[in-house]
Amino acid sequence: MSGSSERALREEIVAYGLKLTPSGLSQGTSGNLSIRCGAGFLVTPSGIPYGEITPEDVVFVDMDGRYDHPRRPSSEWRFHRDIYAARPDVHAVVHAHPPYSTALAICRRDIPAIHYMIAVSGGDSIRCSDYYTYGTQELSDAVVRALDGRMACLMANHGMIATGANAEQAMWRAVEVETLARQYTLALQIGTPVLLTDAEVTQALEKFGNYGLMSKQTATPTH
Image (cartoon, rainbow, N blue to C red; front, side, top):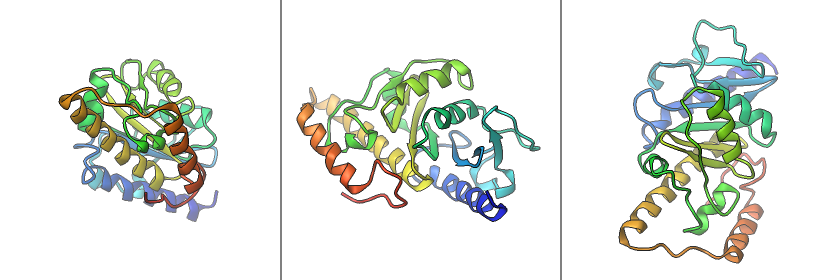
């Protein structure tokens, strides 16, 4: 990858990092994001407020977990690496702690097919991974399992992850997952949510596939 291309990706991480708090996805320095880059990935540094991160602060980590940078990568770099290793279709990852997704994750609930927008997950649910301590290989393995055949997941007692063909799509998906989590939480307070049938979910997935949501498109379509 050329230096100018890597610079553009670094700038993209900075730009999307600035959107995490206004979008309601994160607070303070919580959460992290990455973009696949050459033989590794670029990831936000550890412990720096998003408003203070510069392109030079973004850390390149190779697929062996090595980095040569004065900044430390996010403590969650392992699951970023392992998602990229397991999923060649994924080119960007957003991890955040938004309130409704995290509340459901604390209850260790999957998000079922409550709305046709469940198709953003690439399947009929958004799974909740098992709980392990943050930054560990065990957590990374659990996340990869929860993302099998999916583009997003919740993380037990922790938060959520959304992936995409690019940073724009991963961020868009993260916002949609939090919206679904909020809708599900409200519906549970009213009564018993009525779930879509398998046929209805399949139809939604097919329509979303035609829009290009599950493919390597640069744009994220409206609905």
